[in-house]
Image (cartoon, rainbow, N blue to C red):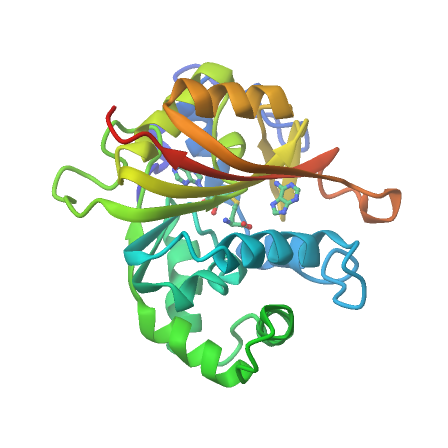
Length: 287
Ligand code: SAH
Ligand code: ADE
């Protein structure tokens, strides 16, 4: 597994029951992810009350709407799409799957890659994404049956790869298949100890994208932590201007930027997020 305990910072103290140590380095972030519990994470973010499909004002339908609208423009298509830091989730790929021949999911943790492989293979006890798939079929309005979309995504998710966004070559030096588009949701700010490392991570993943390629980025606004079972993950707080600046510095043109304010009813103690941003950006033609 990438980021095993040998990566722990020298001299780092951990008192049982206390808060995790200050995230002073990328190695410490990697260490904190070793306790990430995919089931708890899914429960916290992808079940009610955050996943409430009866209201488009709820955060999960808002995210699905942003992605559906971006793909409905018809501008984002090609052979390969890479999802950066997929985690144990596939919702972020549901609108993408009609527009690409192949989708590559990636994550730092083997436990998350295993959750994804099990979903692709339709193993028992996989998370039930059917309400998400039905909702996306509904909002896309193409009359597609949800089972058809589910099969299509399973068929296109042929690679689930290890990744480390802090490496200059996040998928390793063997990977040389630049993508036509990238998606990344709740990853870059959640794995970066500070703004410079957030910006470097953005730069690193941008090397995986073709010039003029599209990037759909969703993330947490002004968040400092989130929970995933026993893991308490530190997050670098970012604002809309921070995200815009990071994208501009990396040579992106911003086509769409939307923000969602987290309503009090969805502040449920699993994080301290203020809101969510969605960006559709396009990489410059020349670096
Ligand atoms: N995309 C999912 C999961 C986001 S949680 C969603 O929308 O919910 C953040 C993810 O980043 C976790 O799955 C974690 O394993 C992954 N991660 C942690 N360190 C990373 C690193 N250095 N590079 C890439 N991904 C990392
Ligand atoms: N949804 C998924 N991950 C999240 C996070 N870190 N904060 C808020 N909402 C999320």
